[in-house]
Length: 575
Image 1: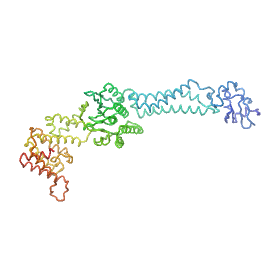
Image 2: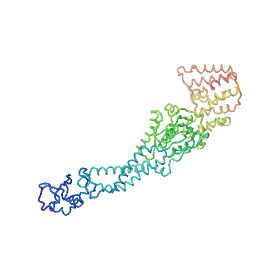
Image 3: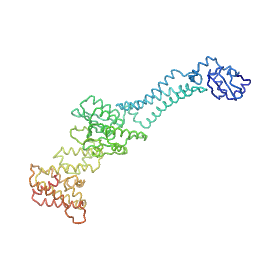
Image 4: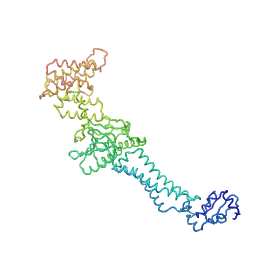
């Protein structure tokens, strides 16, 4: 085909042009685009052009204004790939993508992809928390800096040419490169906002502090005491390698990083160690405790649970932390109900389930203090609080003199209670339990006269509660049984002088006599009855009725012969 191109120069700039190069048609283009393509060598004299007003397609070499700009055909064709591929390796300015830049870009993209695959698949299994923090903080930053150096050149060299023949491939390269740059950028920003302690951990300045790892006497037990900082699991792993005889881990910790608790759990589970807490195990420490077999809790210790926390952390990170916490508990056999409740308490509080709940939820296998070395944790910080509390009860000073071992046990329980902010009722319960043990132990070891003096003192203390709090009157005088009301702090203080006198009474060996058994039988029959009340309509469980009945029993006991009266009191309080 041919066409009249006279005056083409004057009409070219106002018309839209279409091109056909190597069998590919594209357009419309402004006249300036044709000029740029001709100057770049991307448009040859045999390539065809067309615009409105022309009869048909014609060779570019027939355009008088374009011919001086067209390069040699050989030069032009070097810039295009095979027509079958339809892809140009040249940039928009006619230059090919530089091989070194292309290789560097491919390497950077591959490194970024592999980094995040390992970050989510392999690095959670890294035991050294400090190393993981360094990788998680420095890795994205270095990848981002490398991307800043590579991306501008790659972006220029992968710009599609005007014909659009290589647009899909070059667009795909650009999209992949942009994604690989965006992910490290988001990671760096997220870490800076939500995980600033990671930077401190990576620098070796963990804000959590540092736990102590101590091999206890005998070499079969190791204690972890203090906050669980990053790297603790790796340190424990090295200790276990040096101490192959270790079979139990004492966990006495206020908690720490959730991820470190999960790492500790893996170390303990892999070594098939039992776990034990003598003073308390809270927050992330519970994850490590759950990995033990068996899991043993001291009667005076508690496990504390709450939601994960993080200063100024994004809620999504709190949610992910709670999901990890529950997942770890379920992995080691904790019941789904207890696992679900484990993170329900706000991070500002602490849920300390009763040991019975922990046993039922399969977080604890047994509650015992037997067979374990003493914990090395010092409770000296709570000595002043414990002394002030114990000073309320005069008999404790006598207990310290008469039975120092029992007093030390009580004192430790009280300090542990202050350590975990136990309520006053629980602390009073420790004193009440010791008071009951003193009664049971000493009433069988002292003379009848001492028993009767003790009974008179109890009766006098109980009468002060007769009108104001008859339930405490019954608690002072009644049998020490599970159904008995607990003695209040006021009741314990009231009978404290009597307990001190009982502790101070000299002991003497004595055997159980037939009179004792007869008195005990009489007491059993009497306390099982409900004597008529002064008010006929009074309920059977009226505490005043119990108070009146017990006061009558004590009056009758004191009025009897010393032996019979003492046997009645022993039967009431010693069974």
